Image 1 (cartoon, helix red, strand yellow):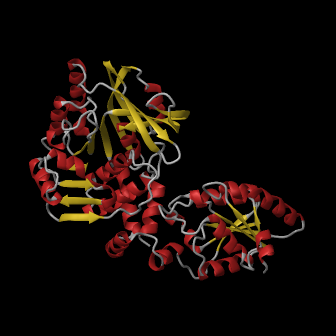
Image 2 (image 1 turned 90 degrees about the horizontal axis):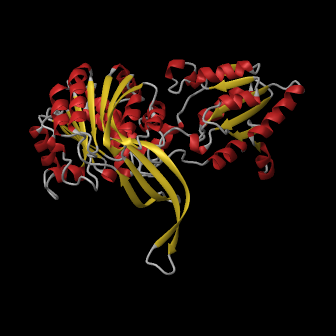
Image 3 (image 1 turned 180 degrees about the vertical axis):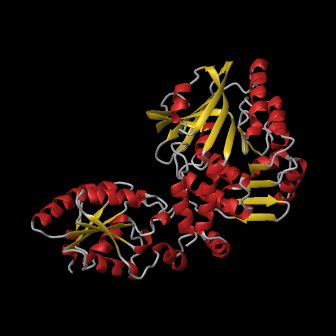
Length: 511
């Protein structure tokens, strides 16, 4: 087929809808296939041939690049190349790029006579997204039916993993060994069990503001860099983000935090919490709700300047007493108490004592920032069942800039009588430890970074639930790094790392 005829096959969804409507008026039966088709292989060719036998005309729609939910690095081939490749096949009459995350809206618009899926979708329980049922409803609503082919099956993801360098060398070596020990089905099944956990999250709320500005250069008469204001965006950060991340995986999540009566922002905060989070807010009259206002160049999300609105002193004694009395009463009720301690004043010595004394299972993270350097150390907690901290912070806590990281982890574990420790190391991955099995190192699973802010909170939230559920540390490190790889592609805390994208990424990694 000539290049011109090939390009003529590629249509927009609206154009294809008109074409299909015209064909149906001529009593032509239209068949539709839909997928990513990142690497075209013999299984696809046979699938399209079997689909074509169900009607007179075969249309294929493919998932837009931004909606390919197979994790960082995918798709390997962009939507233009994928569309052009499909259009080269004589079996295929029309190709279009889908405009939505799923095929449901496309099916409603195109109204095919037959919607064809591969045999792996016939078992509805294996569909991680649960979309196959909604797709079938959309097909039937348009007067069509769904059909499952039974041809030889291959996996584009598995072929890419085996024959292409999708992941960097260190990750590739790790995954080859990890696949021998764990299957994606096993990990996803264990992750779904986290729904049973009852979780309490305690910590500082932070409103993260991004004020997007375009740098204009130095002022003509002053030693000032001038920027042009564009717009702003606000995010629920700090413990609010931690709670939202863990709420995607655990069925019941309660939140304890403290808002400032000055510019409380409570309405905004409540609107950003997931529906299965029950907040218990305390209030202090000597501070605003913590707000971090960052001035950001939108081109590369470069942070130019930051202004903080906060009071880093502990709340007034009456407020602290009220919080501690509440925690003393409720902490024993939870499978996991997660202290997300940003060192912004809320969690003082009395609260630390209460959390350590009353929690059946306590996970702790302490963070260092410009307002608390040297004062918010993990070692101020006398005990924890799980510690999750980054490398600079554990080094600061032990005043050891260049020593063995493994030795420092052991010292912290012994000092805090801690059964599990994870140290995150940025582009070097993570290092997990438990006394019974020793150390487990997991490399980063993607080096694509949009924004690092909030990634550590996502890692903490999901791994804390995994550790509380008794998952082995090598699996915890793998899941945590998968979460981190997804989190650094999210601008600040614009959204949470959700189960389905994580499960799809894990499945892609382990094929």
